[in-house]
Length: 395
Image (tube, rainbow, N blue to C red; front, side, top):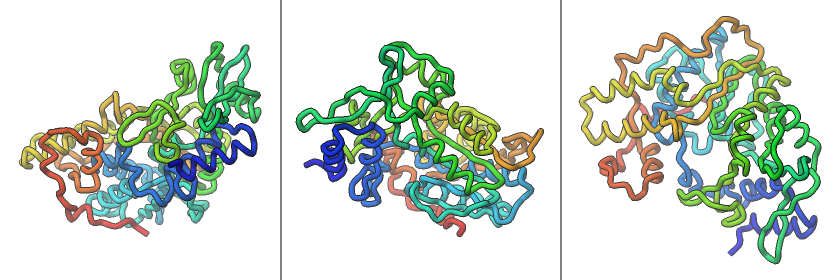
């Protein structure tokens, strides 16, 4: 039976004749009753594998980085960290847990707010940081095709009761302007996506942060490789751990995303006062923060072999270049005098520490990624939470 989201899309097409792919994607993902990210759906996080759910070391290392940025800002109290699009809040729990157990002075100043994408009650004009992890890839995108050397838009319409695509004039000049801003010329027939939600995003973030940082973690590329290396675009779908072949099936039930085009994040960010500080892969980012030290310490630990194996699996997955480690990390700053300062800490005292260990909220998704695995870490499920995992978020 068609979802309410699918019915809503078909009704809109019936009224208008065709809609932009951005409108199709917006309804499919965010329809209030049964869009993929609807509040009524409780199982969506099991369809894909995220860094916070892979291992708590991800949140712990981000806590270490947030403390460094807090230092660059002069140790403000309170230090507001706003995570937008936090889902079930695993990242915030892990940041707060590690900070309260290992970074006491920083924890006293930290005010971590986990919020969903559409919540509006956010702090304004604060000193601190906005964090997003795998958020911008879920912004609705317009799709385009180069026809006779011109930028045309790909629309969604109906053929009988089935969705199909038609190409027509661009619904807004912003599509052509964005490509012109990137100074990219593409061959005939090239297809791609443009995220026009970036400017409203920065408008929102700039009102939250008066002085501080923006950390964006997502998969994607800078402008030229983003378009030139993907002649058919980067759109992808996921449903029940499986990558789909079309966004027009299982509407409202499957995830739809497109890679993030980071050059536009940098260019548009500047217009709102956010200046790029560093841009690197997640592999480089976490290694700079000391994940290799923790991996070495874990190998030499006296934990049971099954527990050690499971934790090493999760931590290595965070830095695997062809997987999560290939994600990009963009750090931008606004209103802060950080000339000559290192954006990443250089004196991280991890040599005597073991990383935080997997708990039930992490391992469950690891098994979801490999549901048929016979690996010995399956025998560890369920563990239950450790005392460090029980820390609540700062309010």
